[in-house]
Image 1 (cartoon, rainbow, N blue to C red):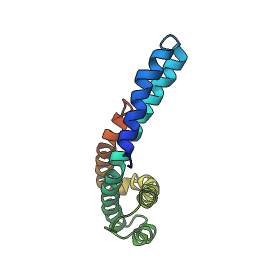
Image 2 (image 1 turned 180 degrees about the horizontal axis):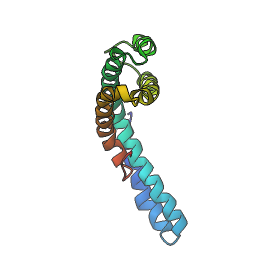
Image 3 (image 1 turned 60 degrees about the vertical axis):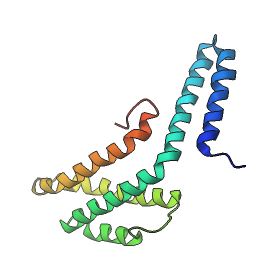
Amino acid sequence: MLISPSALIGNISWVLDHEIAPAIDDQPWLSSYLRSIKGLLSFLEALLEQEAATLDADNTDARQTLAGVAENGVLTEAIEQVLAGFEDGSPQLSMADLRVENLAYQALLDKAIPLLHEPDRTEDLTPVRAYLLRSLDRWRPIYAALGSTPF
């Protein structure tokens, strides 16, 4: 029988809590390492459960935001070239494909943002800022598993 990643992480966490933690309770450094490992396991579980949907939603939003940036005459050729390389709504993309797509969109946004800070372009920056806030909201539940927020 195949065990789910979430169940596997839960079993590892249980062993750490019930077998390892009591054995190292009197050793501060090892206990600290254990707490770090537990936090990373929680993050990994959240990532496994939510990353695909988060990336898919973020890619859709970023694609729409970048299309608007291009319509306003900023990096039009570069944006159109990248957007053409990724089909909107492609069925069953792998996690690697979703990540590559997201990184491509983020790289374009990184190039566009300084250009949108030019005095005659500041109103074009508003949709990008709104996208960034939505993106943070999408990723926040995953990073909350670390006990923090992304920014």
